[in-house]
Length: 353
Ligand SMILES: *Cc1c(COP(=O)(O)O)cnc(C)c1O
Image 1 (cartoon, helix red, strand yellow):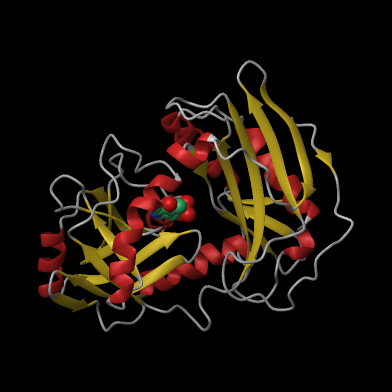
Image 2: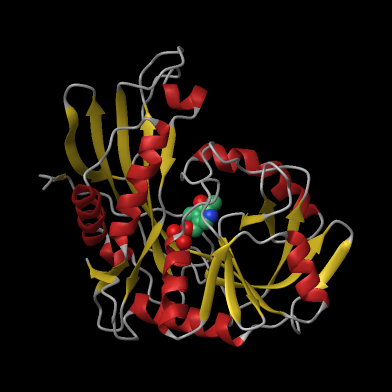
């Protein structure tokens, strides 16, 4: 149990009346905790949101030793603030930390820090339909040292950003670019870890896809460029005939919490699910035979994102009628219903702040 010291701001900011967009406005407070080898994590505190002062030699700037997480708080109709499965983010943090040689954080401390910070800033949780408070925990290596080695000092910080409805009116199918030149991650690399380096590697293909008017990139495996891995910041699902299929976790795919929740719900509903290798050839054959019924991405930001169009090499495929499939819609309604308290929490996923 952390003993978190709270210093409140004396100059609270004006809160936006209606929140739109993502990641540009921040609340009044942030959580900060230090780490030093030999001393462990110390000085947990909630302080006014402020800039950091770091040496230009801080290791994070040079070799990218850092990690991040992403989850959301929702304001229920009952006026209470809820988190969705934050224990899963805590577990994933330590898997990422292990890969990046960042010290472990006790799971209960991670969740406690989020809960206390969200409680302090809970008036910042927007209440318009589809809006939420995005929570961004992250850890950076802070030794002033240009040698390549794990740092001996770190900062664990949590910031909060009110975020607008991802969909202005109902689910909106996106176009996806299947990338056959660049790769995001390889087995043995950092693909399963939530770390900035994976995103740095992805930008060039994202620009290419955006220039061609596609919303996101679908990555293929780094070895054969044949098997489907995941979308930019989402995991990917296919409904082929009546089976819900998603690529199996292989070390280069990020194990999404929305992915896990989706597989769980589909099983609960008696749908057949498969976690296995899915080749792009299989997918295109299924599409051409009319067996590819639905495609959707899963991730904290959009929750469920229907895919209306896929492009591979020079071919463009419209999925179904380009609209939203029934499984896609049901998953979206169910997960967002549980998150916001509109539906009962049968699986113990919702955590009151
Ligand atoms: C965070 C992330 C996801 C989705 O994970 P959720 O826990 O569902 O938000 C998928 N892919 C990548 C690369 C990610 O960084």
